[in-house]
Length: 122
Image (cartoon, rainbow, N blue to C red):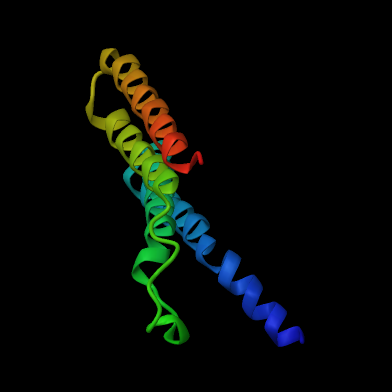
């Protein structure tokens, strides 16, 4: 019975190891390049993107014959891409651009929540 619980726990929570891995890799690269904050954001963003794509890319062998139910986690993908863009932008983009970029992202996120709500309502 303990083995089944362990497998269930791994199935639910195993994919989230990408987030701390990305964070640590980004921190290390950021320290080497003297852009610690940007490195952390970019690494964390890649961790979120990898977590969002994990269900779509990895199928356990016992589920290979069944159609995939989970798909991609779009919220994780959006959050990851946003963090990557913010991290790169801190280094390259002017500060006057950020209020517009953040506002645009929040508007798109709100529209996505509305669309998602319409598809999930009965």
